[in-house]
Image 1: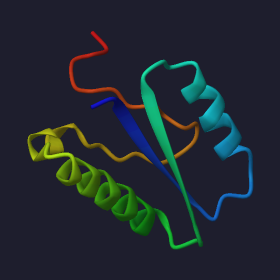
Image 2: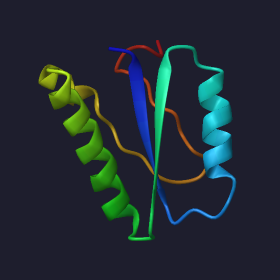
Image 3: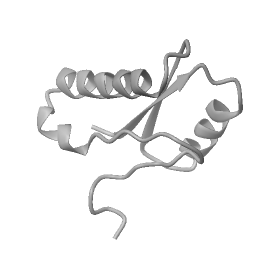
Image 4: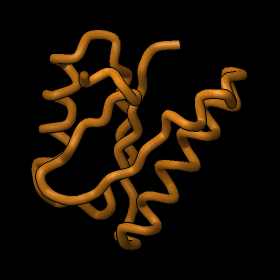
Length: 87
């Protein structure tokens, strides 16, 4: 299964989506899923992203990967990597 990332755009009206696509294009093997939704707040956005990631792992039979899910928010956008891969 390729590495993937879900980015929930919670009512974004700035260049976040474009910048995310540009960054992902420089990361071979990364599958980026951008999810646009009406503003609901950071907690709702985190929950939506986590639910999507869990559903994806279950759909491909990889529930043992749940510990690799992380949620962040804030400026600037931070890209996450699996534990230990940034050493």
